[in-house]
Image (tube, rainbow, N blue to C red; front, side, top):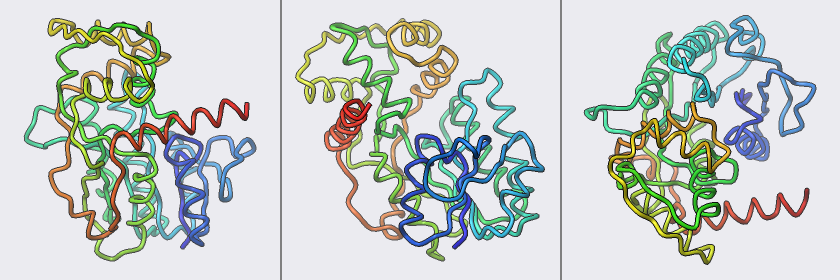
Length: 298
């Protein structure tokens, strides 16, 4: 198949493109700067903020992966909606057969954060022109370079003691980046995946504070963790910006989402793409190992 991968230089796309290429697909890696692209596939220029460029990038594509977000922008909801509309229209005009989208977990009956509401809206808008959309919804993705994972790792490694707000007790179902890639690649061709939404997650449901403790144990650390229920999301975001390299805007957006429980409610994906996902410890060790290899090679 001819497959367009957006965000091909990003955390997910840079891992997905080589897997698709190795599977024999003709990969087009969409990037705003094709001359600088060094990953798998053929680089094509495309920018969701420039609709005309999308039509050219999608020409002849059988399927397209949508792996784009604007979390670092204060008006991310408006931007994400506009970009999804443009992408959906371009996909229809290019006669793309399927869009695959990586969104976020969360119960629709819950009072979802702005971030998760935006993910749901993008999911809806991508399908608004009639192109079938296969949506995968994930919680925290554990992998070197992933924003949520980097927050976890840097908190554990930078602080001998930390205060944890109320959101630290919220449950999530972390999933290894390698397993996310297996699911994304696995839903590309099966007919039973077309037009469906799937929850994806690892084998364990953990509170954020449990993830911190488990990672600390794996690294041989024993930080003092003190719950402080009155620490607001705004203060939490400034705190994260001080002790990690995550900016305040992105940190605030993610922290707001941590009030929502994000766990798998339906494991139907296991019948379409059957394999046993990693547990949290295995995912964390894989992420730490990748970081160590990267630092040795630098």
